[in-house]
Structure formats: C-alpha cells, structure tokens
Length: 237
Image (tube, rainbow, N blue to C red; front, side, top):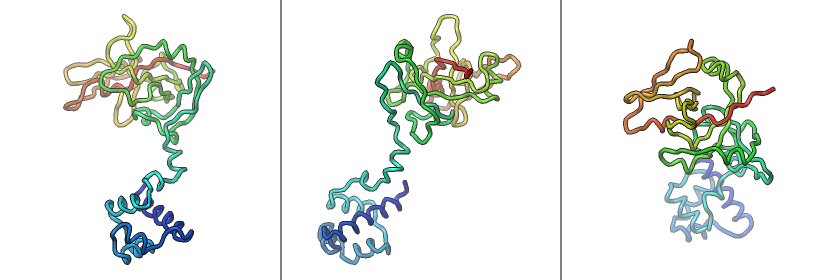
C-alpha cells in the first residue's frame, strides 16, 4: 500500500472524528504542536505530512498504522491458512515464482489441497541456515517445458510437494538422488543438483536435455538456491 493512500485514510479517520464532534482542527493542532494552518492544509488535501508528522498525529489520536490499512488489502496479503481439524493438513498450491518466498500471501494461492498429517509428519527435514520463517510445505504444478527436462519421471501438470525445510544436498535416501525446486531467475526450476567449485550443476532426468550451470554468488551458499526437496509427485487421473 502506498504512503499517499495511508495519508488519505488518515484524513478520512480524522474527518470522521471531526464530524462526530470528537475532534476539531484546533484541538489536533494543540495536541501535535503544529500550527492550525498546517493541520487545515493537511485535512483539505493542500499538503501532506512527513513521516514524523504522521507518527505524531497517530500517537495523539491513539491510532496505529494498522488502522490505516484497507481490510481487503490485508486479507489479500494474509498468509494464514484455514484451520484443519481432522487428519488432513491444508497445503497451498501456488506458482513457481511465489514458491521461492518464505510466506505465501493469500492472493497468490491458486488452490488448497489436503495431505494426511501422518504422511507429512514422517517426512524428515534437513535445513541449512534459518528456515524457521518459511512455510514448510508448498505445492506447485509443473509445466510442459519443465516436465520435458525431467521426463519420464515428471509429466506435464504434475503436482509437486516441496518440503522447504529440506534445503540440504545430503541424500534423503541412500543411493537415490534428491529432486529439488531450485531458485533460478526469480522463479524455481526442478532438477537434480550437484556442486562443483562455486557453481551449481542442475541435472535433468531426461538425457536429451542439457545440463544447466548456475554461478553461486559471493557470500551465498548452495543451500540458498535450494527452495526445497520434492517430497511427493501427484498426477491428476
């Protein structure tokens, strides 16, 4: 939400209080220490307030920034999942670029699918760095281009469960390569991953598809590029 909109919402609240007889421009000027003309110009949209001025008005009127937010906007950006009171857990399905973010805003949720809690509880996490703020499980659907590179293991439209608390290159099972959602160009690609020097090697399953190489940025580690391990592959019947 833009600063201008916050200021406009503050004006509306102040005018509501003035019209209700709870406040006057003079009283607000006295409370804040501003000149009455300054307050009048703000209320009549002839000027704005600085951040410090906004803070002062909010303080004397016992308001917070949350009071200036549009409830619909807050709802769109909320990350709270509906509660699940049975043996199933609600997992959000989102697009690959949003899956790279620690929290998935509700406006980016395409669907909510259910997974058995006892299945999810059995999945082993292995984090490198702090993944505490990250929603652990997220779903994406793979497109035809990505599926082609991982064929025949993946098919177009497959639903992939990403365990974002597993961003280690350690194998989940002995003699079995982990499949990862990997950060690439602000979205994620699905590949097997190896490290050579300061590069990630993204290996496809399809031998006819080329290898991809990502340079690891300075001060970054391989785990920073691993969005998470693919823990489940679902196909629509």
